[in-house]
Length: 424
Image (tube, rainbow, N blue to C red):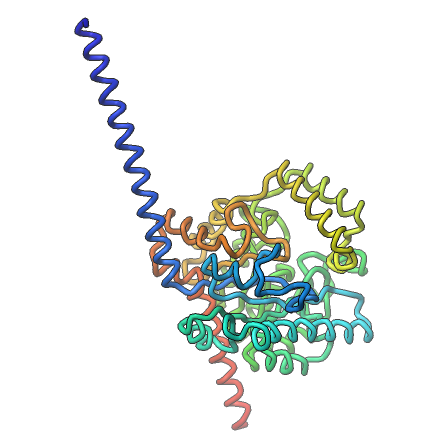
């Protein structure tokens, strides 16, 4: 062999050896990272602040104790290490008439009953309802999963502030002031033309809304500013004596949709002491291609899916067909990824600090990204956070520490207010 050939062979051997070492080192790094993330995930309390439920929840039709096709159920929570889920009492916006106020209250009560039925009658040995931040920690320590309750859309109280006490007694620990469409409390980030909404109705929070926020502070119900207009959000942060939350919103600087929060809103949230629960809704995390939006709109028009209520009128076969065709659209124009989602967490942390950022999914209400598609994949979020260099203490804050801090602050304000009321 010529000398040049010998050196070439030796160089190739060394290069292959270095590559093998590189591959081995990378594999070892991934193993070590996965182990570290798994250990962190086991030690911290993981809280998802927004998981929707259907009207048939906690029945034979939608049994939360059976691993099914929904994104959140008890088996998937256990598989993914999701300790706590806020199950949502959602009421869609309707025309504001006395009859619809009664209908909204009835629908809300039905969902309260379903959540209680799950925790108290069907699966009391596996999941327990928490009424306080301390109870969350106690239940997790006992080895059971935790159910909490949030109300989505202040339309659930109509014009009756007194209903807040009833809902609080049933376990409601936050209420989203409005949803899609203005109500008597606040302007929405997404006005409803079909309900006659203009761009704004109250210029933010209404006078009635100010009473509602004061009563929520008095009772110990967290004020949720997701879904409401920017001015309403800024008003709520100013008016609330307790920290507010954005239970499921993402970052407008990264994805420019009305439901996301801009930097001014983020800083107002920090100034109030609150927390944004960054949400894994694909269209809030990554801007959708116009062609995808058109395809989704065409599918909805064809199948008559004009909103949540319309979806409920479909038969099970029709819903299955809708999901199948929607999945086809998602395959053609892929959803946002877990990495895209954590980019929003990174941004919020950079702007307002680690103490004011948390995590939510909006599972079973439109949420889910590639990599965190249901509760069983929850560990993947911790893995990505660890990969990006977040410490265990930082991950603890993101996953549950921050929302528990806010919850305790809200409880303290309520206790102080009630004590002052009793002595006046």
